[in-house]
Length: 200
Image 1: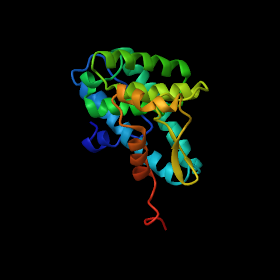
Image 2 (image 1 turned 135 degrees about the vertical axis):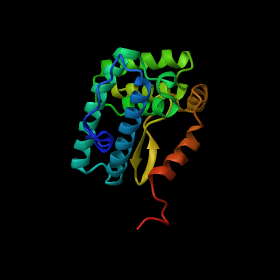
Image 3 (image 1 turned 60 degrees about the horizontal axis):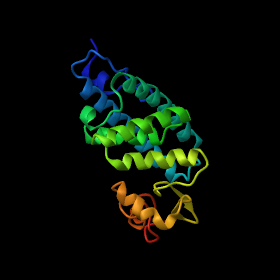
């Protein structure tokens, strides 16, 4: 019999396959999404801190992401998009981040965007999830983003990637229940960059 400790400490690269006939499936999928999200967040924060230069961390992120996306495909095949009704708010947010960061096929991300739009229409995910993935896909296909959700570091500051009709971006963001771009940019600066007084 496996000990409780062994169950709690499964290797990060191994995502448990969801089972269709499992009375605790919602809790299981929720727990796995939150677990993957925590690991990704730790690794990604460390990678950002190195200026995206640590190749070992990058390889760990790629390996984690590959395993997570394979698992997410199985979840979707069984249940559709894991929205609030299946996994709760926090894990639905984690699923959104997972597909945003995914280094997977364009076709799969496009499918996920369609599922997210359907889920948002019935209130199962917030509209902002649609906005985030829309910008990811537009940038992957060589177009400007619509909602200004994607930023890059430039001369020590985070600035948005090019935005389609930037003068209209706040109106589009409002429609997707996002804060104004300026407020979002300030929040990103506080979250990801040290202020001059704290830098060493």
